[in-house]
Image 1 (cartoon, one colour):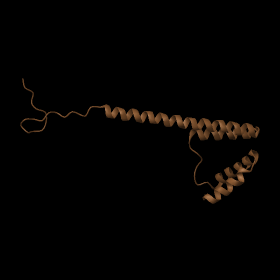
Image 2 (cartoon, helix red, strand yellow):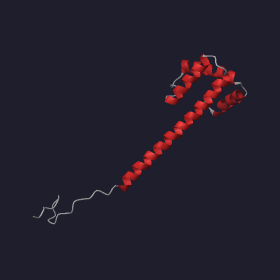
Image 3 (cartoon, helix red, strand yellow):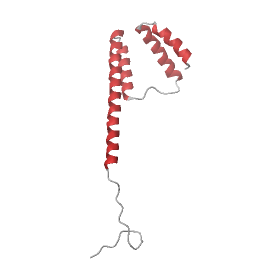
Image 4 (cartoon, helix red, strand yellow):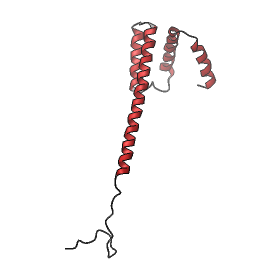
Length: 123
């Protein structure tokens, strides 16, 4: 979608109530299921969030309860992504530290006679 079209849609969406926003979401999901070229979000947190939201909407819960719950789940999702990124950074640093602290592979001393391999052992 081009930027101008997206900005125009966003201006119209900003003026809507949450109830109307959910009606538009229903229509967009309908169009997506009918004409989509790409799949839905594949992350486990995105799937859980969508399932919870759909269940709450099917149960006819108040819009305020749904939007509040989705806000909390979005915050939790961002927190989990941040923790995962921090964990990955720690692992990367540990691997880097382990690689730099290893002594260089020691080569066997050269033979005096110029041949390859280890020198003969003296008795």
